[in-house]
Structure formats: C-alpha cells, structure tokens
Image 1: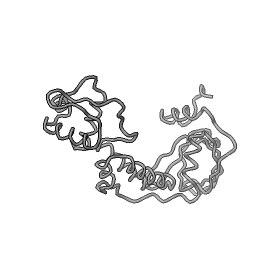
Image 2: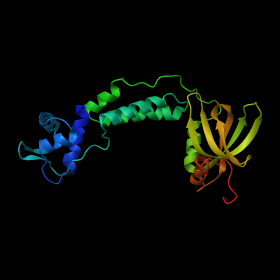
Image 3: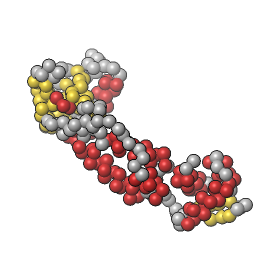
Image 4: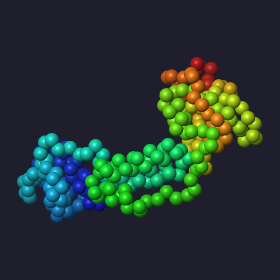
Length: 232
C-alpha cells in the first residue's frame, strides 16, 4: 500500500475507533509492518492531525477532526485522473470545460501526496478525439434529459434523407467518433438512436415529458424499442 493511501486509511480507522487502537492492530488491518505505522503516525501528527497516544497504549483521535470534503485514496485519485482524461476525447465541449474545472477544484482541495498523483502526468487516455457536432449542443441535450424536456431535430438518416423529429431524450452514448442520443421518437412511436453528427439543428420544445424518463430508460435497457400495449 502506498504511503498516501496508508495515511488516509489510518485516519479512517482512528475516526471510527471507539477505543485506542494499537499500532499492531492497525498494521494487521493494513497488512504493513508496525514500524511503518509508527512512522505514519509521526507524519500525520506533523501535519497537525490530532492523534494522541503512544507505543504500548494505543492511539486515539481527538473529537472534532474531520477529513476535507474531497479526500480519496491514491487509486481513487488515479481513477479520477483517467476519467477526466477520457472526457477530453468526447465531442462535448461543455463537459470538457467542466472536466478542467473539476481538475482545478480537486487539486486545490486534496493534500500534497494526492495532488502529485493528479499533476504527475503518468496516466493518459490515448486515441483520436470525437469532433464537436456542428448542428447540436450536447450540453443542451444533457439538460433536456435532466429536465425531461422534448427536443425538435432536423435530422438526416444514413441515406441522407431529411426529416423533422420531436423526441423525448433519455440518454447519451459517447463513442470514439460521435455521440448518440437515445430518445423516444414521436414520429416513429419507438425508441431510436440519433447520431449527433447527423443532426443539422436542435432546439428545445415548449413541452415536457415529466415523470416518463425512468420508464422509457427501463424500456430501452430491457431491449424493447416499442411500447408494449400495457404501457401508456
């Protein structure tokens, strides 16, 4: 276990303990040597973590201490770094800007060892990035999914035929080359996928489908594309 992860786990153990915890007990839990625990306790005390006690009697944490709201293990931090890097490969400009802000906020809130994991540039998401759609703002689609608001599309299918659609968007699927909108299509009376790069224009409608989103997603994930007769 890396030191940053170990320090985090020691804090968690002491915060939850109802009686003094010996170094031996913590070492057994974390599968490290007792000497490592002693060194880590000294390091935490130097960081002003209010740990009291000593060898042979155990350690406790004074009441009132809490972790910062953003605290992760080193592996969790690496997962965040890679996830944010993968967002850079989507064609969703709004999400890419949000990813940069998340990076800055986390880097400013976590301790130095975890900040190094973010800034170390050791994890990369390789491959081509999806271009941003010309006729569609994916941020608008995400908001419509959250708000259960209908959208109007000017759409061209794979044969180049132009149609106007009224849809109830329920999900977005991000691929390496494009993003697909999953929606209930009022023209086809079924769930359909719409490639974002084939949308020529998209606008919010003045009508909503409040309370229907979860049911339509269940219909989609169950493999149905058309509503059974029992579903209104």
